[in-house]
Image 1 (cartoon, rainbow, N blue to C red):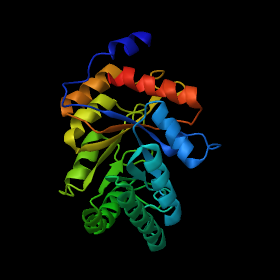
Image 2: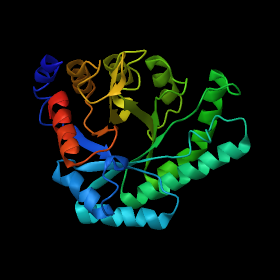
Image 3: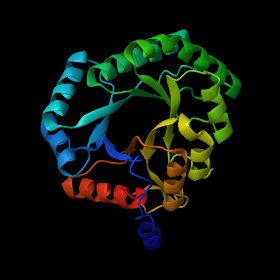
Image 4: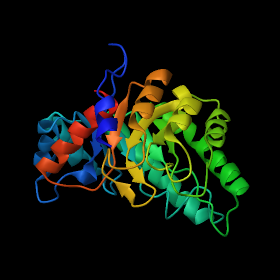
Length: 274
């Protein structure tokens, strides 16, 4: 494992290619005031973050103001309704609840100056086949595209453990069928290690990827710290360089204190050659 870390220390690509390290707001210490949490992120070397959608727009304003005061950029918003109320549900009330959540995410993203909303598009379950998940979710996302255009915020579809988009080819086709620049891919490095190879997916998806989550996964122990699992980080780094990825790489792990977060930042730098 240490050899893998060392071999990833080479530059990722030329000066025109720079991945920016980021984290999720939930990883920051809850016992600190909001602005102090964000200042801590900056102090340990994170320049941007992804935030979760909040129920009250007044809370969103407080997040915006604290981030501005701390000098921490908000680059994306993680929708919070797509698991409980998926767009693929046969229940119209579920679909409407998810749409309301996405609209709130879009509104808050515009406030923050973020350019993407993370969306889990569908969930395959006993009342929803793979084909139904595909068709229902696409139909609803198409209705949301005008709002994405109005707010200049992309809908970034993520692959997760939802029994959907199980191959890189499916993920690519799902995005391509929209044929629209506001519907793109949010790629999670760790989510597919159990059944696929991350670097293969990166090359298959190519410039459809607009956001990245960083996690590591051990086929024996599950999700682990960055560099401690089965992700071939040098191969991932090379794949990102090959497709010209130059946006944020957002760590999505458990939270922790200053020392833990500082170590995470150093791991990101080593593994991605930043």
